[in-house]
Length: 160
Image (tube, helix red, strand yellow):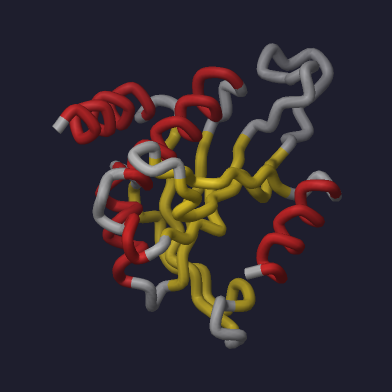
């Protein structure tokens, strides 16, 4: 765990990610972590109205998520992702949020799909897996046009 936290801090200091602890409000305990990572800053022509001048990304990935067993299937991840997606789409005005997971991780894939993200495909031999092997990544995304419906879906899940 110390190595994971050190890595998250280093990536944040290097400007490659922004990590968040996931807190369970009922007992104020850290039960997980998730990050913004792989931010994309597109090279818009100088006269393009979509060109950003505020340093915000055009697209971002949400990933490196883990939850303690006691927090899984409790809604805490839905709430964390709802907050992160709202910030990405409503504050940064990104065009896309990607969510990638190891193709073999069926539990993570189901959780991503339950958020309302769309499956885009498998990127073969894409990065190092958590187990130290080379993994294929299942890629999902939510685009800005889909965000209002996804937000409504997540709000309904959190209300239940």
